[in-house]
Length: 149
Image (cartoon, rainbow, N blue to C red; front, side, top):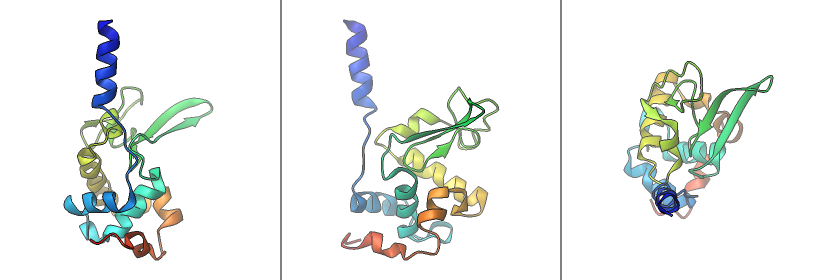
């Protein structure tokens, strides 16, 4: 019985969220992403959409010959090989100094901090395939339509 109670509390404490577009835009702006490293707020919003469709619990595993080599976590799909530690990826560099599973809750403060590091260290958003496919060279400002920001 105690175990079930603890599990239920953990589930509530680590609740996921799928953000609404304008809600996420306001949060990203409040965390200083509008213009950060030369990227507009719309580009940051587009990265989150392109990578996770604004879902904080998005996870994508990468395998090579059936063997897991890394996993992407959270709204920005932060990779376990370079940026976070999930205790499963061999030789994780953990450049953001965080546990990957902390990127799966509805508090995206750590996701944003790590995403900033990714952009600065990698010299741009090109590291995100979702941004390259859906945002690069596109009219991303439409994502802020009617957001009143």
